[in-house]
Length: 77
Image (cartoon, rainbow, N blue to C red; front, side):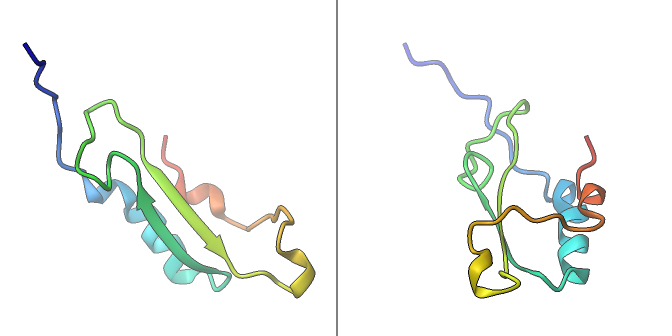
């Protein structure tokens, strides 16, 4: 007998701070949701997998770690 999954619809209001941050952040060019939330397979305890692409400041910065002011405002845990 298969167990039924307790699958919930994602609460997109939870990513509102992320959206607001990137609307004002000129260096971020793309953010995307992946994982169980994106596939509508999330449970109540599921995390949010969000990928972010920042435009490199110059050609040699492709693999450099960057510090982005106010990025802590997007995390509400």
